[in-house]
Amino acid sequence: MSLLKIQGPCRIKGRLSLPGDKSIAHRLVILSSISLNSTLIKNFPLNDDCISTLRAFKSLGAKIAVYPREKQVKIQGKGLRGFKKPSLSIFAAESGTTLRLLLGVLSGQSLNTKLTCARSLSQRPMLRVTQPLRKMGAKIYGRKNLQKEEFPPFLIQGNKLTAITYKMPIASAQVKSAILLAGLYAQGVTRVIEPVKSRDHTERLLKAFGARIKIRAGQVLIKGGKELLSPGEFYVPGDISSAAFFLVLAAITVDSKIVLKNVSLNPSRAGIIRVLKRMGANIKVTRHMSQVTKYEPMGDIEVKSSQLKGTAIKKSEIPSLIDELPVLMVAACFARGKSYFQKVGELRVKETDRIKSMLENLRKMGADIQVTGSEDIVINPQGWLRGAKVKSYGDHRTAMSMIIAGLAASGTTTIDDTTCISKSFPDFLKVLKAIIK
Image (cartoon, rainbow, N blue to C red; front, side, top):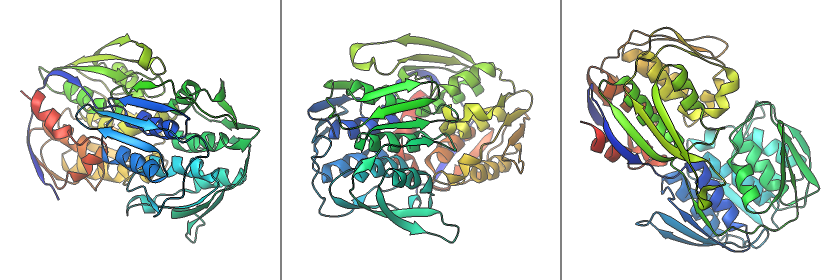
């Protein structure tokens, strides 16, 4: 347990370069490990989740060297089917991305593996991933409850896969990615149809590694059987989900200004920027590109103190900012006018029930926040929050959002435990300390 006391309100000033995007880093490790040659990954984020993915593929036989000081990782791939059977089960810890995407890769191997995970992740539903993979011929055996939902641990017996057309009931980048990765091993053309576009890092990187992939309106198609070749070097842009906390804090505190360098500006992830601009945030974005980042747009983001106004976040926008919703709830508490968050039920199946964690915490701080039976959140802002004793619920994004709320609130805020932050941003408090004035 790591209790934290915060005194607010504060102001922030400075320029930051953030750790690489977690979603991109996971996928780079996976594709580099199943390619035929070596890859150097720069600005690699050494958080708990990404370390889980590195360890998983190292146990499968990929040659992985980590250089913490340089924030670099070098990987010598084994090809699509060059993995060895690990001596022990593969432990995904609390990384849902590691677990779900590994299911796609391991389904097409010629070996048997066991996937295990830590306590919180073992309670998260996985049928949304295993069901389409089984339609491709995957032999996956998990733990089921009375409602026929499925949970880790998993036994995967490698099998020959066949392409399918899969219409996704819910937009999910992790489910889509697991299917596309399995599609590399499948005979024929696998087609994924999305109800709403989710983050597209997997598609961009598959293209960079030479996969036979096509992207059409609402659809992604991949033809299996072709070995991948790495371009050799990648720079991971700064994580937009990590940037969100600083963007919101600068916008809702007086006399603040922050510049975030080399941040991912992928349109399928940039919902936080679009929503904050709509709320009246004083944001300036400067885009730039280089040879090692041409697969992903990136740039600098500047934000200054702003007078925010309420907004409605529509269901169609949720996939582009699902991880940023908790800190956007904090922003809405300081806005003028009512804010609506439509159909955010997906927050219930994250590391914790984030609807529950944010409602309980923000109400303790004086917020007027309600949730309807249709999983809409309504915030009637009062323009302030006051310090209180709040809980992280073991969830990194809840913890960081409440730190931001505490820094903008009046008085003292105490957070019961912040150790969970290492899941995505181990140096978060250190970085914050450097810019608080």
